[in-house]
Image: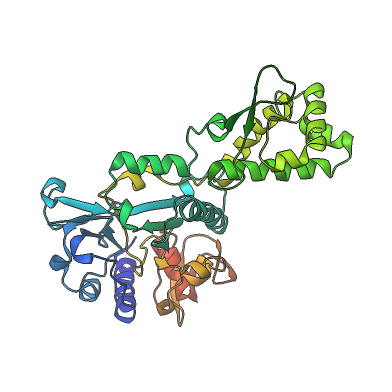
Length: 390
C-alpha cells in the first residue's frame, strides 16, 4: 500500500469516527484495549495492554489515532493496563464465539465473498439455536465481524467465571465433538406379556438437545421415505454404507409399520432401523453443529473487535445486529458505513476487477477511474487498488 493511499484511509477513518461513536462494552474500564495502527509495509503491529484510562475517551482516541483495527478484551481485570497477564489479575470473562469462513468446511479460494458470508450466517443461526435452546443463554450480543464472519458475546452471569476447560466443554457440545449416538439414546427395561426374560427398549428424546435434533431428523427421513414408491425408498436406503438389500427391506418395513412408535422416540423397532438411525446422526451433526473457532472461545484473555469500529481489511463496520433483525441482515449492504456513500473518488486499478456491494455489481477496468467511495475503500484496504490522483 502506497503512503498516499494509507494517508487517505487514515483521514477517512477519522472522519467516520467523528460522525459515529462506537458503544462501549459493559465494564469497559475493567477490560484491556488494543489496536492496530496504519503502519507502512506488509506487517502489522498490535498495540495492547492499554486500559480505557490510558486511551482517554473512546471517541477522542479514535479521532486521534484513527486505527486500522480496534479491540477490547473478553476478560475483565483488576488492573487491565498492566503489562503482563499475571499482573492484570483476571476477574472474569465473556464467553465469546467466533465464526469465520476460514473454518467452514467446503469454503475454498474459489468461494465468493458473498457466498462465504452466507455460509457463515447459516452457521451463526445454528450456533444461536444451540446457545439459546440448549444452554438457555439470554444475554447474547451478535456482531458482524466486519470481515468474513460473526461474533457472539455471551454475558450471562453463570458463564463469566468459566475456566478454559469449562469453555472447551461448551465448544465440544456446540461442535458436536465426540458425541456418540449411544450417549443420546435412553435404554429402559420392558417386561412384556408372556416374556420370560425382560427386554431392552432404546429411545431418543423427542425434544431438546442433540437427541431431540436427531429424533426430528429421523422422523423427517421416515416421512420422506414413506412418501416414495417402495422401490425408490429401498434404493434410497441402500445409498448408505452398510445397508444392503436385506437391511433396506427390514428398515423400510419397520418404518412403515411402526411410524407412531418412531414418533414417540423408539428406534428399537428393528435392528436395521436402529443401524439406520445411527447413520443419520452424522447428518444431523454435519448440518446443525456450528464450526466455531475453538481457541477464541477457550481463551479467557482474548481480544475481540469493538462493535461500531471499522474493519481495516474491508472498510466495513463491525456491526452489532439486533436479534430480530438478523434474518434480513446483509453485511454487504447493511455494514457499509454511511460516511463512505456520498461521493466518488479516483483509484488506480492494476487489473480489471469485479465485485458486488450494496446490491450493485461492478465490473471495473484497469487504470485510473472514478468509483463510489465505499467501493474504493473496500478495494484499497484489501490491497487491490491505490488512491488515484484527482
